[in-house]
Length: 164
Image (cartoon, rainbow, N blue to C red; front, side, top):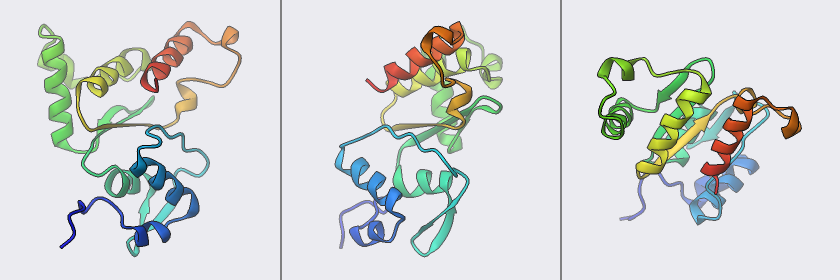
């Protein structure tokens, strides 16, 4: 009987993945890298274990395993990979900010300057947390730093804290 968790792909399963996904999985499992920037056709399907999954489902269920997944994009705000993760996230926010009401937490902010610090708090507090940010270019647009707005600069600094 295998002792590896069911969420970890075997070498054979990894070899069946597209080349980019196999490279990502190998680096992630080896502990060589923990931050990835995926670009291009992020809405494509990925073949895994004999079925096709959307990229987000593939990342959540096949690669990230038992991590609490927090998702963010500018238009939807913060969402969660499971209701358990959402409960854990909200409970952690209440511990960090005891005066924050339950009503305030129900309407999590969408704008990055207010939402991402909450995600950051959870990222650094919680164990086994994965954050997926969709449409990163809307939060940190490409360009010379001198021409970025104050909000864009703040978002850039926040992201740099996450990857150091």
